[in-house]
Length: 201
Image (tube, rainbow, N blue to C red; front, side, top):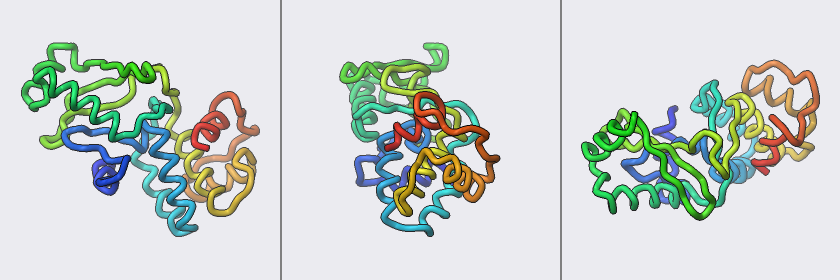
């Protein structure tokens, strides 16, 4: 299962990413992750086991996670509206614009001062590749393993209860669902894993 498949599952919801945008909300949108946590928490252990496998779409690298109030659909609508107004929505017009700008373009939203990077995607139907800019306002930079852990811990707590900052609980989730080594220290509420667990609350 990849990000494209997962995007199709969001059709008709506020998490929808309309074509021609490619926006991996599993990697880049905290609000979308919170909505999924709420849904999965109602579905029980089977859903927790299944979603553990989906975490592969997050990869292994650093990423920027948008923490603002705009939904994925609202973000995409703003980007598409701007491209439409500027005559750059067609694939060739978009490609030319991006390639003449060193391979990417940044746009900003006045609502929360967030900044977004537009690149040329490698698909015919989803060629506007969108993600938060590095160190953008209303975003945090996070390692994939940290985001995966925080997400699954929140789902586990939604189903079973407990303290999401418990090192024993975190390590049990990491071992069972992510095959990751245990934490050596308690999560810090200000930095790292503890902070992302709070972001997804």
